[in-house]
Length: 408
Image (tube, rainbow, N blue to C red; front, side):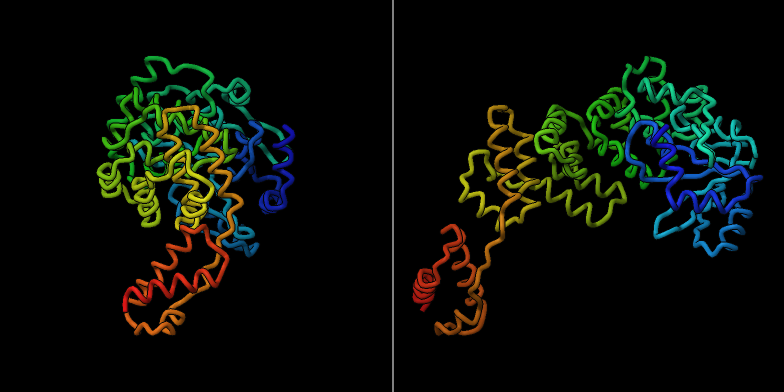
């Protein structure tokens, strides 16, 4: 309860509460309450109100608050305060569903609104006084780390097949139980309808699952219930992925989501290209994924400090650390853990040396402008790197003279 009260006292939350008079019911709901009761950091803050979205727009307009209404067909208006988005959704009931979207009617009954939500842990409401409304024992389920559908699982899934993926996102955190055979059957049958879900939403949810601390358990269950195959035949979960949480604990830092995903693609360029063609991932994500697939196998656990510094100079700290992690994941010998961890830590203290020679230095040696200048400069820099960034201009200059003479 303490974190819920802290949430209510946030200036931006108080601002939105104060927009509505005491006769208008407004509540915090969903993930923000779930995370606050779980003791986690709250990122997204959502509200539910007992007035129609058109009335919400009038209130925001009258108070000079910027908003977006792209979700108005589903009862949602997004207020923007200090560059942060806050969804304000009218209480509603489903009239008709098609497996992804619903036709709704508005209501003033929060219990009726709660019945259309997915899980008990996501159907807890808090008013401006901090009073909680929990119609489905969601607080108890949070305390016991249980994940339950509201009402019939098969009905909730048929209303929106995306709920299957949402289930496994939360299952990573709320997994103090085994999924029974009937629920597995619901997921197996329901996942055959993923064509009703946009590829964008599937990719978005898949990344959220991968981002969870215990994603191996979720992904393994998704494999067992054939969900991974329904998403893409190029995705597979194996023991390499199991090592990720072990390494995250060692380095005390989450590993890049796309790096994790490259392991699900079995570090296969074929699988990666197929997935990129099938799913609308961003150009930056595609480039990063290809980088992780084409990893530098020359990074070994036994690299010397000198060799490590050369790799760091060529790759940069972040890329080097990611390649260390990828090679570490694929190393079956646990005795090398300390070496891999040391390599990862060495990178933290690396300062990029400055190569002070340039094209003009080569031209002054009597080399005409042109491609040869760049070639000589590259040879000199490679020698300097291999010499562990020797800090002796005379030695570098003598090496430059020798290289230039060899081309005359």
